[in-house]
Length: 113
Length: 114
Image (cartoon, rainbow over all chains, first blue to last red):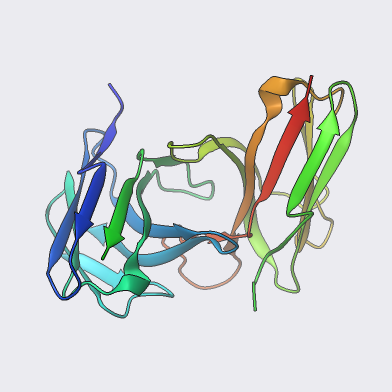
């Protein structure tokens, strides 16, 4: 009953290959986000969605694309993976209103070799 | 340049000591959140503060939002080894349509030794 699940949990891929990470929620929340976490940087927003087929870029969106065809699924695609995209990726969902209640997934550790 | 500057980045203390973590910015936030993260897991929300000057307490943890809504602090009283973890502050910038986008500080790695 986690409410939000990410898959895969770990992945190793080669430079230049496309990679898709999946985020699935069972909470029916409108807002979904993809962040990456790197040492010394905290979490940085890659892309976010405010509804089905409504997405926009965050602060570190270069080299990434997203899709949201259903409320429950938010996909993050690395078009052509590079070593600089080695990171831990977190998906989050949020309730609406003045106080946004965030729930994060457990993360995907991606290594690009 | 980090929009939210969190300090210190590392904190190593003995059980029973008190500590404070700071989160500072030159920007105004409509709300500010504090998270705790353990290895291999996602951040877990501890508290949200929305009003300038607001103080919230969660057992031994006290959170404060600055009067101007540009800074926040987390104070832990009588720290315990179970408090060990990464603490993150994050805020939603005031003004405009935010869509709930969070800006994070760099994080504070807290280690409490028995």
